[in-house]
Amino acid sequence: MKIANIDFPDFPLFLAPMEDVTDSAFRLLCKRYGADMVCTEFISADALIRNVKRTEQKLSIFDEERPVAIQLYGREPEAMAQAAKIAEEANPTFIDLNFGCPVKKVAGKGAGSGLLKDIPKLLSITKAVINAVNKPVTVKTRLGWDEDSKVIVELAERLQDLGIAALAIHGRTRCQMYTGNADWTMIGEVKNSPRIKIPIIGNGDVTTPQRAKECFDKYGVDGVMIGRGAIGKPWVFQEIKHYLLTGEMLPSISFDDQKSIIKQQVLDSISLLDERRGIVHSRRHLAATPVFKGIPNFKETRIKMLRAESLDELFTIIDGIQSVDIQNYSEFSTHFLNRFTC
Image 1 (cartoon, rainbow, N blue to C red):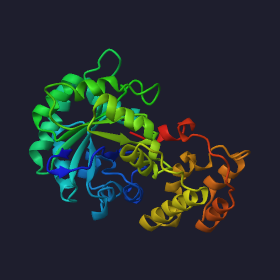
Image 2: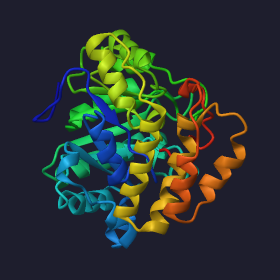
Image 3: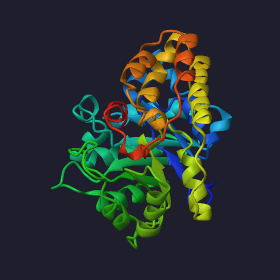
């Protein structure tokens, strides 16, 4: 499979862009465990144009991440085109446009999935960005705004006609947010449309190797994008890839090795930021990780872990956690996951 001139292996796996999650430290970790492509956190076009320092920092990418996309969101064609030119200077593999974020602060202002209520403007933004940059442009979106306006089949064709290089589709409407089950039937309908020639990447509720294989086999997608299933478990890519290529489940990583990976993620975040901010940033991964799922009477330890202020304190707590039989991570509460994904 190719996106523009970039070759991907069979059954490619993509890390979904997630706000406050997919910083460069986490992207590199996911690449290490088999992600074939990663994407930055979503970046506000307006903030980028205004030279907001924290926003500019999100443009930092490393050669080891490639292929990597920088994702932008906004509501005006001119601003998005200008921001795309700035993002292009960071030399990503792709420029990705976010037409899928459902959170109120984004969609409620007419950006992200809010543009699914204004398809002409969505298309104008896409055209403006394609005309502004030399990098291939990709799009991530949803099925539609609500159950009565699932526009994805026609929208995919119109986006392709404008010249996008690939389309990622989350199998929910905006009004669903992250509730209910992702509907892959319409993703498959897009992929199997005789008019569609660009790669179609499916996204939504892929947390196990078996489900990933089903999505490739049943719906024919060119790639599978994994979001919340990777939070706190970056080795999920390794597990899925092994199953897709061999048909066998990879032996589980030992509990101590899982803890070591989590600790390495903390260290990487600290290296990227500093000790205090790195620990704070890691808390959402620690809160959502399935590594500690199923440990009896773990609530007090979890609270201590999420309140730790120093690296020594945090690692002492993690090192003291003993192994148990871990339940299936797909059963873990989505409370923390829904707070940080777009």
